[in-house]
Image (cartoon, rainbow, N blue to C red; front, side):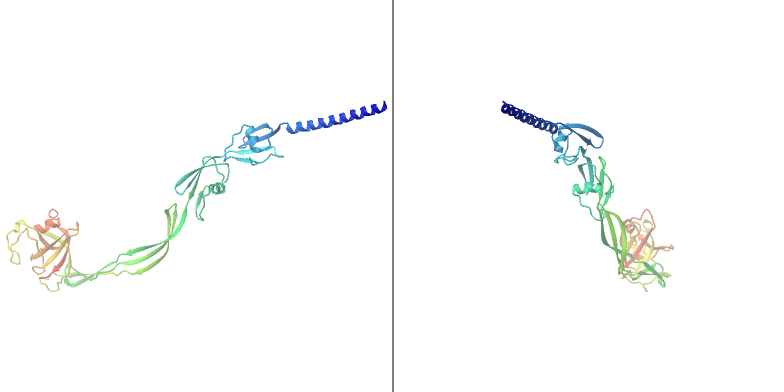
Length: 336
């Protein structure tokens, strides 16, 4: 009887122990499976508390009904297990634009500095490139980041230096006679510049050096200052005369010229104070650039300042009929 009672007591206590262990296990299991609460911050503005059963950050956010884009920033990382942390931060990516190399590139990025954005976009900057706003500035939604490519080069420029003109007056030459003593030559200068360009367009140019390749030589002109000489003494081919030209026509048609020829207003002839008869000269209208070749067969004009009197045909060629008197250059082509 006593033995039976002992067996019953042992069985009773064993059952009690099993029941206690089972109860503790169930309590712990229930505690582990009970929903815990986590705070999800979206852009630091909206704070929501959600119960969850999963432990991975991405799963927790999904259970909370928060949609994520690939470009959004999540802290802790979306594939990490949430351990002791009870706060998940979500920073939404917003549209940004980068103007570079003549193109506008669109990006989605969470808040970051301009420098970080450029690194993520894989944009390489040169040592002189300009970035607006500065690389340490924070970007804002819809902001445009401007990159201006700056380069420096050295350029040489050849500069032609015109020759100056020197005039020598000679009393031994007839008035208005022009002779070239020295044709003159232009000089050549080389300039070295430092050129700064922004996006391929020149911004500044700095002169670094000047190198003379060739000095210019003056053009020396000898002009007559003496009285008219009605002879060919001292006259030579190539002589030039500057002054005014006039013309004569119908009133002298059929009359005898100083050379004995009959005047013909349709012939390419002219009167000159001293050039030998039958001398060929070119006459250039300095106003319109027209030119004509005439033969000297008469004397005149005798009005101060005028150096040649043309036939009507020659005057028409020069386009001076209406003007009557024009500035010309007369050049001796051939002496008789």
